[in-house]
Image (cartoon, rainbow, N blue to C red; front, side, top):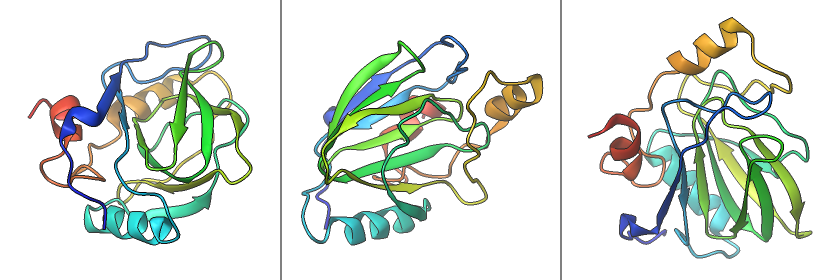
Length: 173
């Protein structure tokens, strides 16, 4: 089971529009560091935690090696094995290193790209109910910007549930 930890392990990154990537003008990226213990059961434990908190896991894979964003969904990424350098915010954006045990919460519109990873790099990805990831690789249209701005807020934090940092940093509660 993933241990309950203090929210001091959450890194908050506010990303402005950059190059052709819109990012999210109101919501920051949240990086949860050392949230769970990597191991053979990590994928199943993360999938269960996400499901328990209303963010059903949708896939197990990696992060694309090209810049992209989602205009119709917020996304949670749990890094269950290995490590990677992920560029957030589009070309020339913010490079972060993520390791097994970390989780990233990306609001709709946030650019992300795998800039290099270990051979065993594995990710569990999920979205709030009713949201699915479109793969956007070009500047957004006016309708896409409207979709990003109107993507519904999730009812809970995918890691901590009803009392998680998502609610404080995204909803101001």
